[in-house]
Every structure is written in C-alpha cells, then in structure tokens.
Length: 292
Ligand code: RIB
Image 1 (tube, rainbow, N blue to C red):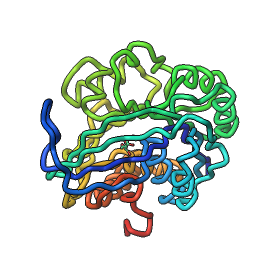
Image 2 (image 1 turned 90 degrees about the vertical axis):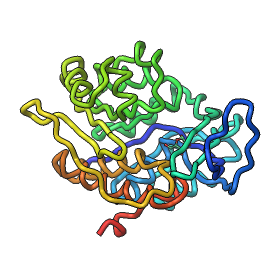
Image 3 (image 1 turned 30 degrees about the vertical axis):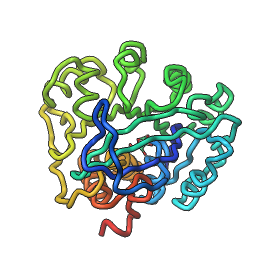
C-alpha cells in the first residue's frame, strides 16, 4: 500500500465550553475547560493512523509539545519527522457552544517555523506516496512547487481559508483539493455547491475536488460532470471540532486501500459522525474498529 506523509500543524487546544461565543466587549464565564491535542495536521494524521493507514507526520513543536508527539505515536503514526525547536508549540483557543459548534483562535508558534531542510525531508519521505497539507504551516507555496517538481501528488485541505493565499498559491499543481462550502466559495468565487465544483473543475482540471457540506454531507463531481452527494450519517452533535479532519484522514485511508472515491467518502462520513458525538479534537477521532 502507498504511504501518506502529513506535513502539518500540531496544536495544544485550549477548549472552553460556553453557552454562546463571546461577543465584542463581553466577559463570559466558561462552563468547562480542558487542554487537548489538536491542529488540523495532527488531527488528520491521527485519523489516518486510527484508520489503519501507513502514515508519517512531519511538522514542528516546541519543548512544551511532547504530548502531541505521544498522541501521534499512540495512533500508529511515524513521528520521526516531528522536529522540536525553541519556539513554543502552536496553540488554539477553542470555544464550543451549546450546539456543539466551535470558534477557533490560532497561534501558529512552531508551526510557522518549518525550515526548507525539514520540508525537503518530508518530500523525501513522501516519494512514491501522497503528501497531505493544510493551511496552518509556513511555506505552503514552496511545498507545492517542490512536490510538483518531484512528481509527488499533493492533497491540500485549504483550511483555514485566506483570500490572499487563494490569490497567491499555485493551486493548479494540486492532485486533490478538499474544501468546505465557505472555503470552496472563496477559491471559486461562486456560491452554491454545484457551481463551486464546476468552477474548480474548469479552473483546475487535473485536480480532484472534494467538497464537505457540514450537516448536508459531502460532494464531488462525477465523471459525467454531475454532482454526486454523499449524505450525512445521523449523529448526536456534542462538538464538531475535528470532524472535517477525521473526514479527510479516513478519506485518504480509504483511497490508499484502493477504494473508489465515493466509497472512501462514505467511510469518512461514518467516521466523522462518531467524532461529532464526542468532545475534543484528536481524542474524539474514532479507531477503525468503532466503525463496524
Ligand atoms: O480542525 C480543528 C483544529 O483546528 C483544532 O484542533 C485546532 O487546533 C485548529 O487547528
């Protein structure tokens, strides 16, 4: 089986349970507080590992990030390219409201200090496999170009979305682009799911685009150019944090196993339904055995 290298963020998540997201000028008491493991990169690598895929994580933590490396390792992820530096580990301040929705504030920290040498090591490791990226580390454009020059397929989850990055990044070099409706609309410049998929197909014909639609499921463009929708799996929502990351990890685990895209998306949908029913980021991601 091909392997996948996830070059991405590792965050300490500071999670606050609130009735509603704090408003400008408001001081709000939280009903609960915990620190957990997160970062879109780490979450996606954990999902791949718990799904049983051969996965390596590359990224950077500070001296305070040992629990992130441990969590990856326990999920079966190869952590030999998780570097440690002097800058503090990245972190996120996450509010989770009564409906299970979240609002996230990021501090990049060590995630923004990945060196060219570390990038090249991740590319060396990804030779013959797939490189998976999110938009929480530095030098994404350089990674796209170097991976493309070496013939390494790149899958990019454009999250968090940034309009300046959208204008600057060479998205035409991608093999896979995974976006939610807001991110997709930002990249495509159109609003509804069908138009987003059609526009991205026409702009990036060699790239497979996967659109996640939250409560409405997910979608892709079939070979005949019509939109295929994967319906959501019913779930009691406790906390939506890392649902998208779980989806992406399981999606690529399925693809590496040789599943067709629709089948892999169905697997990913089942996994993310479990994630939303539990609190936390990495800790809420299911093991493959839980999907049966
Ligand atoms: O996608 C969820 C993740 O976004 C959190 O774990 C947080 O760290 C941010 O990166």
